[in-house]
Length: 216
Image: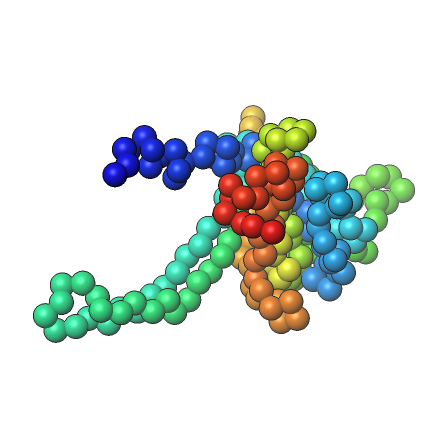
């Protein structure tokens, strides 16, 4: 027989509680080359790929919100109160963020405008028109969160190789910071074969791989 405390000692590990209070989102063209690994030999993230740009600071309270929405079909059996079979028919994976910086990479995604040809005029003005017919491009979206420091630092990266802005929030000009609320939906990449790839890494993840449940 075992006591509850003995069971908890085997089943619980406070070292594995994560709180991602720091993070970054980067975005690149849908055909951008991806690094062979996003993790260096030192268990730190690799440098920003040349064709990628940052999406800047995001709102503190909301951070990066990852969602999974599924549709299902149930089969009910005569004489059974509960379904006898459930099939998942659709799964949509999303990430929401509220960007605070006004920068080219953010404006392109929020307004659905290709700004590769937009240049500042001699007087400093930057002009772009909002399209009447909106056709949002796909992009490669990478979000990396971190928890802890030094030898106790954890990272979690989510790679969305074929992401698209599918919803934007209204923008308000008032005493608050101007912001760009966007929802990206992840679609399967036909070449890579996935819509979202998760990578857990960092010095702490390497040190506690066994506690995580993974053995070399």
